[in-house]
Length: 422
Ligand code: ADE
Image (tube, rainbow, N blue to C red):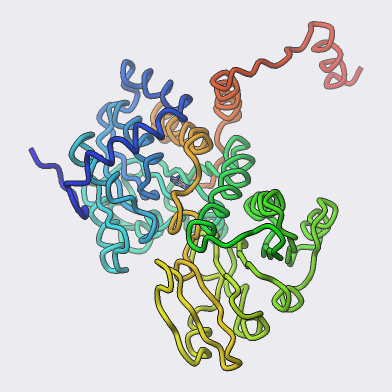
């Protein structure tokens, strides 16, 4: 039987299997969950729709959900992040309905979301909240009523969902995977840190050592990128709008300045803020000749590309793959990577599997938790239960061969005496 799908090229499946198996070697927490799910079938009979980056790591998550007994449909959470070989393998080797084609246009992107919703899921996994937003905008009185809960992977998605909650418009419970400690402290920091630098290097092959590297935003992602760029020998400058984060960046040893100041001196610019128009025409106009500009935030809104298009006197597409040259009225060139879409997934392969292991273990275990509780939660943005977060940390340490101290009885009693106020 051919399962419903829309992928680029079925002949890529064999390569996709190799890639998925390679990632699996570093996803031992998720593998442990999959082995248990395979025997216990905690998701039996549940329909699950996932709108996530279609990568080898995500493939291992959807395999796990399927092993739990669920029927799964997967679509992309970004038009440029799909690994077509992985999509082919998911359909042909793992029997998972997948709707994703790298570089799909906006209509196809949303049609693929529709294909995922077509089979009336009761659980959804989102990365950026496009699936949940579609449910709210088009299916408030129909499909949204079937949803037990949704899991949200990323900071930007959680911000969108909290806005719906604040307006009293959230139609079902949502779990913020992003806010779990074993997610943002590792995935956002070390995952985004490494994979964004990886994307810049694969795209440009430029030397970071000795360069001036500007990071806009000092959240967990910005911190990770700044630290890794420094490790490569760059002089890192941070721009911020939040005084506490700016202070933290300064005390972590980075220069802190405004984007106007940074624009004049930087060689590389990367945005990681989640906000719009962080680098604007007035900044592009100040930049040196040949600078590299990119974004690692979820949406392609952080660079004012349309302003740049209007200002540039000439645009040369694809100087290298997905590297566009904008020639400014001064004659200087600005190179933009991946049309301002997230550089780590568009130009490289996203976060390494070892870090997605924890994020996706949280996704799988929270889905199991929702099913156990039969979706009986308030229509709010919830945190992942602390017991799940702690279990993921413990098992990750175990798979890394790391043992930690345990409290002695005396230490436990001492701490308990404080909580009892004695
Ligand atoms: N988000 C960031 N990196 C990712 C990856 N490798 N797979 C899925 N989602 C991601």
